[in-house]
Length: 65
Ligand SMILES: [Zn+2]
Image (cartoon, rainbow, N blue to C red):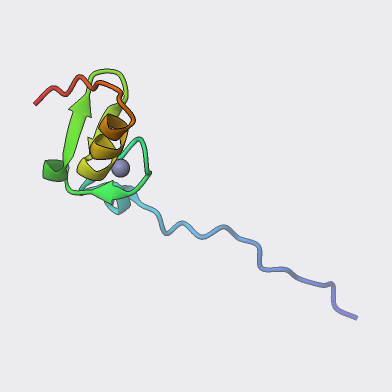
């Protein structure tokens, strides 16, 4: 009777190249090209959609660009 074997070796698919291009919006967590994100002083990188959403809630943002 053979011992039961489980192939549980973790897959090392995520190398440094997986996050090479683009950055993640701090609000929605989606990845965008660098040029589509705007740096907010407190919150960090935000996409245009989230910036509009935050502003629509009446909150002010301190965008660096
Ligand atoms: Zn976003």
